[in-house]
Image (cartoon, rainbow, N blue to C red; front, side):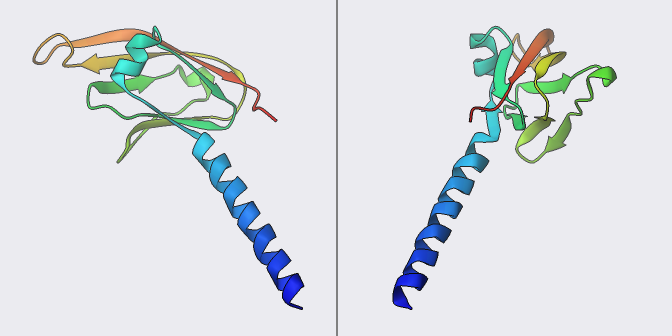
Length: 116
């Protein structure tokens, strides 16, 4: 009886640990510095939520035909990328060239099949 309970606890802990890793990999935080360093290109696995979490990132948008919707959350601007593909959009960086200035730049999100 004790062995069965111990085995259940071990299996349960493993499932929780694996689930936590999967959740950790399903969200990517991006700052303005990250965007500039990557030449405005982000690569993620399908199913990933990208959060642009920087006060200098004023706006992110994709064409309606892409099916990608950006929403504002407490963490920043957020969009989920459920399917593999290339998603071309725009990002507005505010305050990078002085007070009130904003730069609109191209943005490319490449979504790949998730690693197995």
